Image 1 (tube, rainbow, N blue to C red):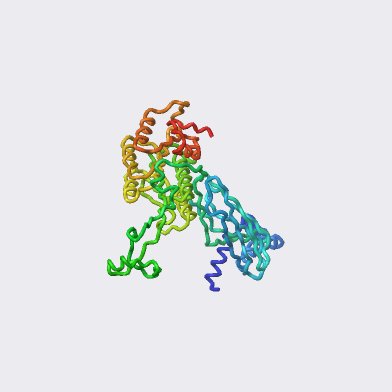
Image 2: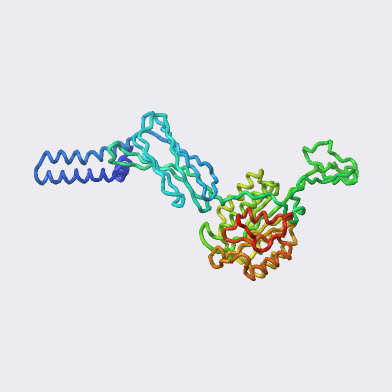
Length: 440
């Protein structure tokens, strides 16, 4: 160790002195000065002892030879808003000597609660200790956890040195997903919702649609008549089921929503989109998420996404961090839907103007079926308290226009239940009036 390293270590030790250690050091220096002024040798011995104790503690900590390793485990990594998650910490003493007093502190964002702190008295050689704490957030988002900080203290509490680990984790707080009832939606046949086992019918040789041979194809599927016709090896196409498709359109426009925090109309819309998206995936739909900004999250079987669980995780992760946009319309979403908008369309919409209603009506023609959650955002802001049987004239007109264009419209107000509204979309049920009587 060089002289510069020794000086740097001494400075580190002095910075780690606790209030008690600094008090002892100050008292020792003061006593030594007084002993020199008054010529008291006994007082000088006391002063030297008081000053030497915190310095000796700092040197002892700096020369500590034990090594520790820390780890963190989250259960679950993805938690719903308002749901608790548990963080498990493990500290291993990988040295051959026991540790002294250890203070653990994990760094967490303030929205998850206060910083957890733990005191470990002694960890034997090759031993370990496990502690855990809980975190909870009512706000969606991705929150970093860590790094873990370890404070090493001497037995007298004179000095503390902080050592930080580099590893950290991320807790994803996703919107709440509510279980929705299974309903038969209008126009569902166009998206092959309950007929996703439909296959390409092959009535005979004349109906066979061949393709060129590819390396690895089964030779038993060679179609000799087409091979002779085209002059190259052709094989029969495999029968492939037509999978149902659906798009969940989320309106993130800031001007289209009211309220703030978890009780805002935007948070209700995000939770609604999450519930509908996961429900449709579980029913066999290849469901993608689309926002008014053009952001698209692919469903299962598309874009390299494998299982339904993976696709649902991607959808929830995207909704965990989605924010209000400054857009004024759905132009970018329309461009995406023009490239592939077949199947079922479920839109979660905020406040609309007449132009947007007209464009949504034209957009309906490109889909197999369309369901709209139309939010009465004034009820979230407390601007309107409607009595049963009374409605806003403009809202009634917009609902009528969308229904005439072929949309199944579900009017949503603050406090309404997403499962109850979804039940009203059942095409086998009697058509619901504009004011949904959601009392459950």
